[in-house]
Image (cartoon, rainbow over all chains, first blue to last red):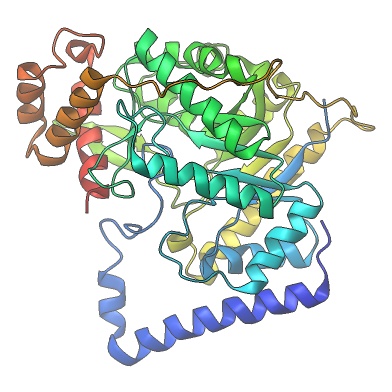
Length: 54
Length: 374
């Protein structure tokens, strides 16, 4: 489905702002090794429990 | 068969939206599925996200997917009443082409802190489920559907699931979301052939199919056995694409095929590329199966007579059993302890049939309940 260019632009700005904030925070307080450490064992803890096997 | 649309689960999540963005730019995202009840932590929805929802809503290509209603809680909860009010309000703002929920009841004392687990298939749970589905229909006034559950305690439950879903949906003339990764979990976890499991579902009731990825986990006391879990955090396995190819032709009223993945699993460029490629594979299968000049006939999936909800149906004994089961699963330190506690509980020798539950699935239920408990 075709979306208006103005809407695509607004979405891009919206997700860039959110992503940038998150990246800046990580870069400023965490060394790279620590970023990798937090990936396991349940990296998706705050996601959605959804279908019962999550 | 109507034209089938290729869609993705699209929520207010920077990672999901970033993964979906190239598909939106290329005008390939034909519909979106929105979990309208997952915004409870969001104070204000950005205007651009509302515009995105409105764009799909205006084209009748927005579908709602609830997560937290807890259809089979034995006792009616205030949170369920609030959930319905929210759905009613949001259904006036956006036009959902249909609204769906998950099968099962949520573990956990708080409405948002738990995971859905299976229930006994009895007259009481059937009555509760039908009552709740009618209330959902009253709130959204559009077709209502239920998703098959990935989790089962025994192969017998798996084989009876499709029939029970059909009975539940009858008063609202509703439909099924057939989650093929959930089916894949059950095919693997209980060693049931695809042909056997697929024919146990009323496929003429399927209006939506989900595909997603998941993960493997070691079964307790068995280094060789692996349990498949529907964690929505990885690429779609080839086997699930095979299931998709072989399921679409059997579903005459299928309208949506949806790719689902959790936002937290889409944080890297690599994972977004995999998501993009998975969508491409899914889209190619859908296009191949779409009949040229697809039928304009759409199954209404709407009640054949006015929906009447009377007094709220509850089952206090079921409610206490659910509390007891949740407490055991959330607190047991081992599978052996959980089995011991279950045998001492009010669930023993009842319609729950805990005596036939597979120990490795009890262990999996513990892991799920303890993962989502906060």
